[in-house]
Length: 269
Image 1 (spheres, rainbow, N blue to C red):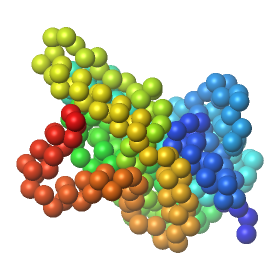
Image 2 (cartoon, one colour; image 1 turned 90 degrees about the vertical axis):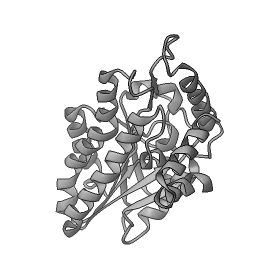
Image 3 (cartoon, helix red, strand yellow; image 1 turned 90 degrees about the horizontal axis):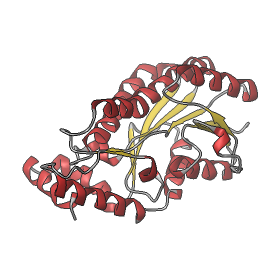
Image 4 (cartoon, rainbow, N blue to C red; image 1 turned 45 degrees about the horizontal axis):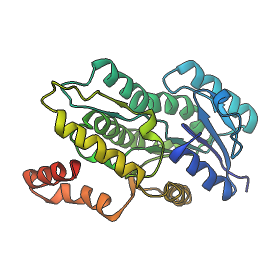
């Protein structure tokens, strides 16, 4: 059987790169995307294609180019995303729109470009990378949580709508992994006169510590490989530490105020 063709958005670094390396090692034909391939001239793990998920024209061109090369797309992994932090009251509206443009509208644009080809094939798998943060409204990460929560829900809709065409949808929600996401994150400045100054500053330090001490993103790649090998994937998967995955379960069983207090204590540890 011919190897499956996999396209990973945001494949040049972090989780996307780790997924690509893992899948290539298992014999898949892997392509990644990045906004500017000229910035990654030494990248040799797998081919990179130019694509900006916020630009429909670049999406269309890249999908057409990949189909010219391989004649099919078997797996799409929507991994491209940006981080954003800040008190809700002080986060600039234009930055909120940018976050949704990349983390939510972007994946939808890529999906809608790929779906007609997968329908013609009568098969395909689309994995949307979300986040455990998408299961809860975290303090000073509300916008990021909202973009990932929206992607979780929209995946459920796609999943039911496209099942009859032989196309499968699922999400994978990672916890904290050691990546360079902090370097590309937009964070609202800590204003000296802000009523949120101290608690926001403490939260920023905690977030950076969590990322730096996070798990090896190779674990995400291994989980993706298992999902691809599954005949009928579940709607949602999670990967991360026991406590991170347990937090999602606790939200469903603890009284609302208890869970809220737990999040408040953790966010400023």
